[in-house]
Length: 308
Ligand code: ADP
Image 1 (cartoon, rainbow, N blue to C red):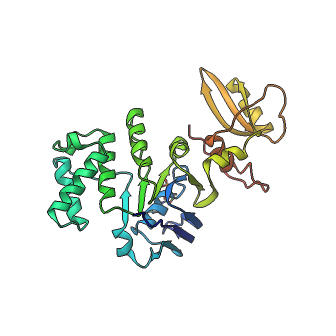
Image 2: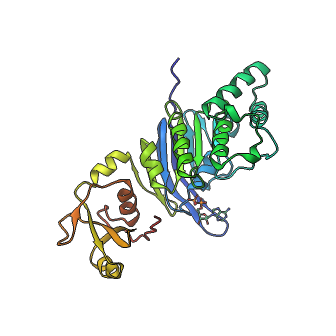
Image 3: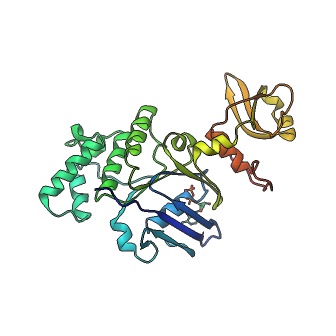
């Protein structure tokens, strides 16, 4: 049987904290089934939005619907169909993986022993933790803990799965494994991956949004967004002492050190002159160009936070 595909609709959601920080500023998004990347620097408002979606906090204004469910009014219904993998989750270091997953399954309402055993076994296998199921979580690596978090989040077949900054503490091999695991989930359910790491989005997500200072700056399909920058990203390699002058004259997208020299990407609709060569754009160029407001007709003054 084919799962009914849901849609998550976020309309005009705003949130100002009591200290005056406007963490979400009139956010509207339409999120279809599949992997969706929410990309933005630290402090952009991602966690605030994620916590709102999973009913841990309420916005000041706006509405959110998951299919037929009114997320802000029918919190119980949302929680039943939700999987949440937060940035950091407390684990019980002395518990064994299998026992703890079984315990969470009970909490999720899977009370029948036989079906619970089946579900727990399937999830431990899916997350590649079957061989270590009798080991204590305290001895798990960062990647194993994350995968255990996914197993917990997947209990009860969620229609909406939220993964907040998942790869931050993982080594490269663990990261690849984790991303592969996520990529298998996103076919019939919505998986939102909140991250400040551009590669996580470019490798996995079919749709994305860029958020900064509580505002959605761009909604796009990564491949199309990259395509749209074709012919506009130019590269030059300079000594870093030349950077300030370059920044005065050009729309600098990013700067990176490479073997002691500085590789600069700039945005320009025309040939910027000697020393520049056209490069194939990537999603990082899309991200920084959007953050800087370069590819908008009315250039908005925005701080560019380069996190390389
Ligand atoms: P991100 O997840 O993108 O890093 P957050 O949603 O955590 O962003 O934070 C958005 C902004 O709201 C930041 O300026 C942060 O300092 C502020 N903020 C987050 N949580 C609180 C809170 N509980 N009280 C006050 N300010 C907060």
